[in-house]
Length: 281
Image (cartoon, rainbow, N blue to C red):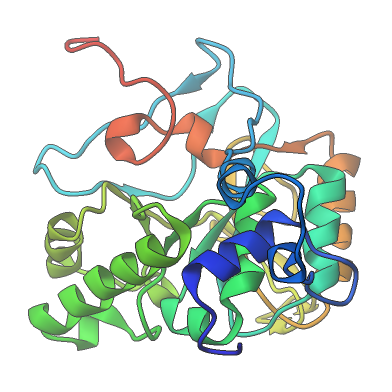
């Protein structure tokens, strides 16, 4: 099925869960007489409910005055929370899916859509574990090197592929390398993007970061290795992600923080799940 898994079969496979080290057999193909495919899919598509912030505990990001998607790199909040985001998708770790499900950790995936062709079912499993699939372009170019048409194709085509495969059109965009310009914001809006989410800290999981070594952690503001409330942490889908994820979860908890769902801190108008503030509020 690699590269050619039908959407319906992929959905059922993900709905049935992920066994350690391998993907599930489709019970429907084996004469399974239990819940219908529709029931299985309904269960698979039920969004994970994460703890919402208490009213008054955070400052809701606002739309940009120019009407284009605002650029967000951290959330102003009193809560001792950090937001874990994982980019790309070229390497897969089945144990990581099991870990996310077991620990019930909210993350957000910024998926480079070309990788759907290789492991679409893997990201179904991640989606069912509670991770939204957001936009990270088709092929991971440096956006500012592209023409307006090239930038638009990268964003719009990625959103279309993710929507077709996972049943939801991305609302949030992360430009590869954090590189964007005014054209990026303009075409992103034309593709249905409501906000651009960058990051305030990076965990160089599975690789070496400048000045921090293998599996190092660095803040974007250069103020040390401590988390701050509202940090958006960048990670990548890499080999050994499960072990690396356990590492950062340990750091987060040792410092008295907890992972939270960034979408719960973003208003619906910016692609999140929080109610928009009343006009004039």
